[in-house]
Image 1 (cartoon, rainbow, N blue to C red):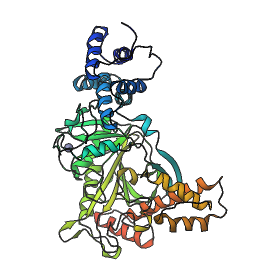
Image 2 (tube, rainbow, N blue to C red; image 1 turned 45 degrees about the horizontal axis):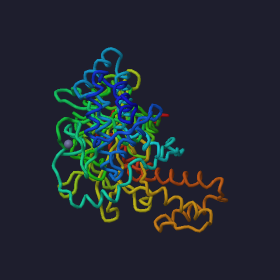
Image 3 (cartoon, protein in one colour; image 1 turned 135 degrees about the vertical axis):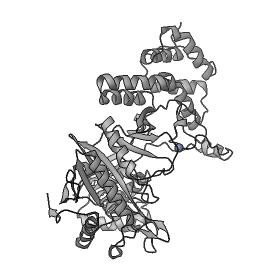
Image 4 (cartoon, helix red, strand yellow; image 1 turned 30 degrees about the vertical axis):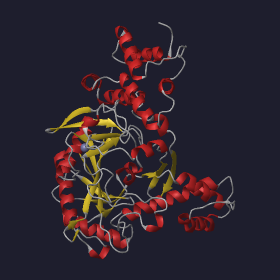
Length: 496
Ligand SMILES: [Zn+2]
């Protein structure tokens, strides 16, 4: 057979998948069918896989919209990924023979190689660190999600709503081709595992915010709910995948994540600023001698529990959740309920600490009032020019996910700081003036650092706004009053 574009892609499939030499003609014909019987002669052995696929799509029809291209690319990449049953068999075989890390590595690298994880897009994200009083926070400006093609937007007007898949986390996404208004999922796979009596799936996040960012999804499409079972599930997942952390978004609007209608957790292999945070003071809870506990030195209100005894850990976490859901302290604007609506929940995070399990319970309150219509414990108006959206699980742990609009906007702020002609947005002006006043001499050499520092300070404030018990004397006294209602053995002592 003459060397060609499609022929080279067939070579790559055979090299990387379960297909063998016997499948060559079959694969070539399948590709011809998908690509309008169009091939290009030539030697493409030096072309990397993604470029190869892009060429095939362009050669098929160079007028495809971005979305049409992405649907077709995922269909092509699907040839590189085993069928779900085979993949699961391979994953769990590796798990049995070589352990959890080897199995995860296999699936992670496969998800990257098949372009399910958008490696090159993720690289576009901006990233820097900020040394806050709570430790080094991480700031990302998310540029990985591709901008919509205007031709796709125009076509969308004529597309009818479809109820399938029910949501983007449902198992029914596995292998789904996608549509004009639905992402390509031909190359999407889920690793199944048992979580008590239920089946859950593990997948990686296509637009990861950190290393090996994964999602654990319930096979059932049911709403998120933080309850005793949540803590038990998190610890069971840690036992299965001990090198990953796992956490859940809260289950209420304003303080929860963007998907509340399908139970899921997030995890991965990354050390967050919160992991490294120290205790502000220790607490000994009555009847839980096996649990080491304390209040975390963190901008949000966090109770940290560490123990080798999972039963006690789950029991105490459930008791704290139950206590928090009913707890009110009007002196610090903390109300469990208004007009029959409950406001309190928890963002839980679990990780292994050697042989022990650690649970960070972040207290959340989603109440709104006249002064803070977007939420009392939500970024306040004066910091919304940087961050307006919910403070979810990832940000709680100290990794900011800021919107792409900030890249051009901060460029104008920079020009403003350098006294160059600029188009600074009104919403940034008071902040920029303040930076100018406080920074001293600003020049080309230091302006980026000054601006990054200022963004970091705003993010610190954002997290402090989301904290229910503030980091001042009255806030911490109120935190202690709440802790006391759970039942403590001795007076809280200072700890380092
Ligand atoms: Zn769903």
